[in-house]
Length: 559
Image 1 (cartoon, rainbow, N blue to C red):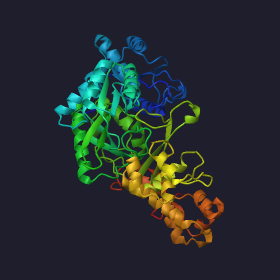
Image 2: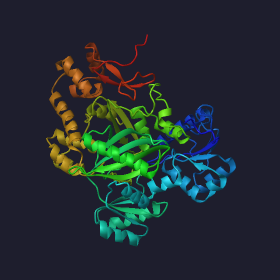
Image 3: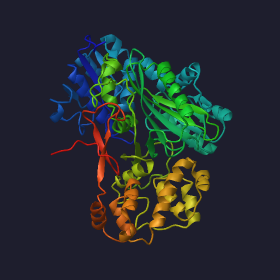
């Protein structure tokens, strides 16, 4: 059925100030929502305390911005006052991250929404509670037949230590209603446990933490999903973490689509995801579900669910061409997925799940130099401040493209000015997750480390380690070669592996200019491949492109 005509004015809560775990991706989501709803003729009231965003920029008001913007603190008191003044018909809280979700729930529980006749759309208070309240989520999953880690709930220090007697050490402490793992952590002894529980109870909006069995070393996956009121469910994107459980997904290298699951395992995760979104009750929008899988037994458990557009949604949108935030906003106002057109093909509906015939890699960006007292060890509390994304035909190509997109003067797994470390020292460092572990793995492999040894030290799936080992082996084979020794066939092979001209110049002891000239003289130039959501099954009207080598150029010829 078409959009709801009983709604005239909609209030949207933004994410507020840019913080670790909640940054510009929510400005992207909020801007998309404002644009989508204004296209439908709705009056938009935006509450966002951050003036340094696109959605609050006055220059955007006539195109994608809100009709009225309140740059006020995102707190229950201020949001309630704005709602009393504006009297919108609906409140949309699912596009401003955890901040918007928490404040919307607090406002709803004051009774003001009922008093003013304001409907919460996208996710109502019951949905938010089932997803964010650790105890309710655990009960909902058990009723749906979904496996979970062993866990106990605690609302005080005494309850936490009682739970510890059941769960044992090490364990994970997960506060309820927090963002980016704030207040949580992994406790290996009672002193750490007491400290983390204290921080978790303080950080939780409801003074509640979950004491959970430690799954460090398990594989971690995410599913980005969408559901409408007619129970149409779309899996937008599957994402796999390079790092195992124990590193926050925002701090891990991630890969889309999933690379190391069997088809049977993936189908089970897909089926569980659909059960979860239905059980929680998200019926007018998107969600993000995180899973862990035992690397030996294959046991799959759900970790948590975000009943909103997530930090990963922006990545999934760019990776697939599926505009998650925009579709979520349209579904929230009554459209069903089969009624909405795919903007890239302009012929299919968004019920057609995106097909990815390429690989996407994300690498997080850190700024520890700005926090000299900070602990650089990566754990379940997010520390990254940004990320870079690369697209290639293979994991190797996408990884190398992403490395040089980090803007840290690195053009491959190795740099000419890298300081070599002894293998014993590398083994010691590799066992602790840090931002440099990818490059330490490459250095260890260069010195003869075995994949099995690195797997035991890191828990990183051997498939990923073997991919890195193959890149390292190629570099070793090129040592001592001159540029003139490289045949056109070999140069094409290197470019398809993602080697940049700059890195090849370092290896061959020449200049980037000469490498580029020689490959172009041999006709080895980048071609463009489409991100079209459908794997070329349908004609694409407005695709976008990534570059690769040695295949058909899919971009239209320009005069």
